[in-house]
Length: 179
Picture 1: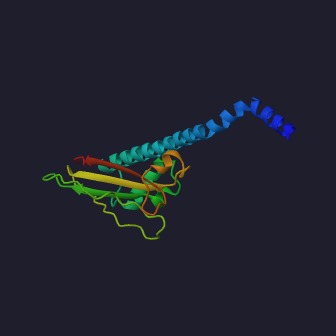
Picture 2: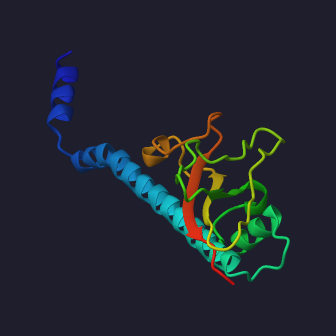
Picture 3: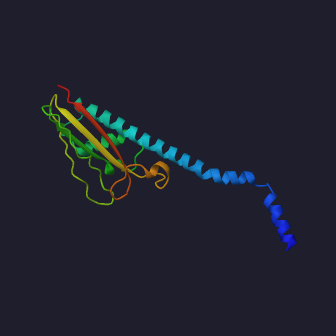
């Protein structure tokens, strides 16, 4: 019995492996910070790419560079050709283009429509090209998957109602150029 007590006391006082305990305690925190920063960086890249491509396509639209009639599918194709960070972009993006009255300037209060990826039905959105000098509102929404959905910033990003993905929404407005 005395031998066991001495062996236990010797093991208790041994300081070998202390650094590995600190490492084991610190690595989960460091990994969480790494995954959160990678997730937020990818999210911001996706958002910036979507905003930039929508701005470019809407500029081309308002200047009349697209032949009539301009369809939703044409706008989706043009936007998706300018973004390279979305999988299956043309099938998942929703674009809404509507005229805003200049007399009362009432903006839509509803959030932009996003496609529910769990349903085969796509929501209906309006596409009004507008005439000269009319104020137009553009809203685009796409749903993407998080790389690390259960950790860090992936938990706090705005999700769809069924938890299927993260919404990336861009809203812009412009005035149609006169001919």
